[in-house]
Image (cartoon, rainbow, N blue to C red; front, side, top):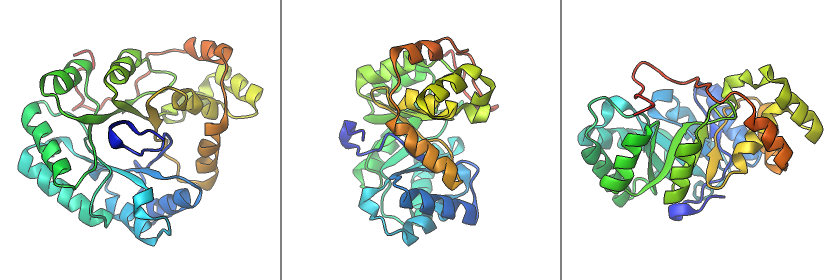
Amino acid sequence: MITNHGLRMPKLGLGTFRMKGPECTEAVLGALARGYRHIDTAVMYGNEDAVGEALSYSSVHRADIHLTTKVWWDQLAPDAMQRSIENSLKLLQTDYVDLFMIHWPSADLNLAASLAKLVAIKEAGLARNIGVCNFPMGLFRRAVEEVQAPIAVHQFEYHVLLDQAKMVEYCQSKGIVVTAYCPLAQGRLADYPALAELGTKHGASGAQVALQWLLAQNGVAAIPKASRAESQLANFAAQTLRLHDADRAVIAGLPKDQRFVSPPFAPDWAA
């Protein structure tokens, strides 16, 4: 459980990207029944209604669930952000989210105005905490150091095949939580025998080893997508693994330049 900024965010969450309709509702319901208490969604996923259905059906109390949603990059003007959060809350069937985030920065982002609106949404009680996703280092530093927004979480692609050490270290130095999306590199980990060997050593899979490598880091959460019960259970079980320095040395030797999420509207990652 991560408690920075008053968060109560379990390190392991359920990502819901590309889940829709009844499949999404059943996946979220199943995850909650299996012990998950951290659910991640977004306007762009088109599944907030399905997540909301699961929350309404579940016997787990809303206060015990950490719920994240995100506003899309073309809705970052203050009035549009207000409409976005209000619509999200309606679809999610809740009075508040635990974390409301800017999903991607836009090319014409008015950083100060958008962050000020995030703060206003938090102060109005519609979100318990605020954050950003996919900000390159330069923009993120401006948000934290110049605008001084109370950012609780930065969510970005992070896994054993992508070096994010500088961003992670910066977040840790500021007490900002990292949420790693695509923590299993979109299923590509099976291509690396070294991970499978580590899994065999620990009586686990290579994917479980890769997930535990993230979860063991200070202030880092991960939100693997998992619709099947077997995958949810495997990811949950990864929390009990304990890696050794020798294991981490093997992981350090893997390629670290594999970015799998970089859509046409993505920022300049080097900026």
